[in-house]
Amino acid sequence: MITLRNDAGLARLGLVIPKRSVRHAVHRNVIRRWAREAFRQRQHCLPMTDIVLRVHSGAITHADVDAALALLVETAP
Image 1 (cartoon, rainbow, N blue to C red):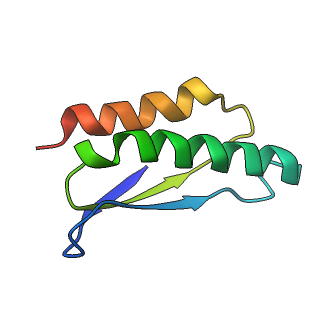
Image 2: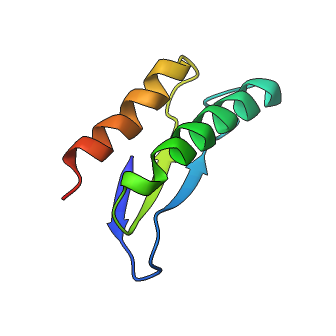
């Protein structure tokens, strides 16, 4: 996960899920849905930040995505 402060006035999410890491489009789309939902639930707690979530392996679960964004909320100033 990469984060960078922005001047947009709100938190923004970018997702990078390459075919090389997650072969099936269905699985890539499920991961995108999980990430968007976790981001939506925590968006009001996040500082003005651009967040890029990059998936490196296909073995990712909903709990992994949720935990990554929860950690970001906890460490946010």
